[in-house]
Length: 227
Image (cartoon, rainbow, N blue to C red; front, side, top):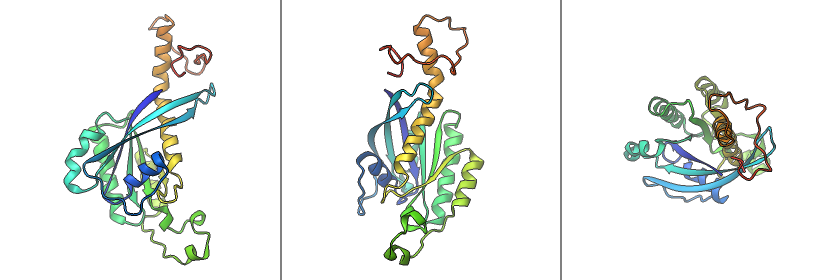
């Protein structure tokens, strides 16, 4: 099993805790109280090695940080040594995207983004004029509360080299896919190191090059790094 540290950052009330609880417990609470300091949760998923078709277990150690300004100074304690970060904004609040952008800047300046997977996530899609979410008459009559366009956020994400998605913690739309994509991306980053370790265990000369496209883990070998 591979373990990765994941941190959620974003303004207060954008729905960070709701996203985590939807992912971990598949639940949603309309009256969830604001996080104080940070909360810790863990969840394991399975991904598939695209070459070997082997199932890989990935455990996320998740730090859900408080969005209030008075807790911002504590954030470095939680994003330090993180493997991935979800930077969350509210699709119905214009200023939350700009605050998300400042979190991205901070992560890149203090942590770097060479091996850090940063996922920009727009939450509360259920309140927007999304065809998939507004099928009934009652939904059609609801006010469209979107103020941040998909194009605006997507353009920024592409410019910064971020992953991007719009989701709804309330309905669950897109939540699992976000974490699944993060797991696949982190495994892709980690795989060369795992293969090199496997080769060393096999007594290979450390100076010998490793062809990750050819040298695949033996799924019948109980010592395989990914078993």
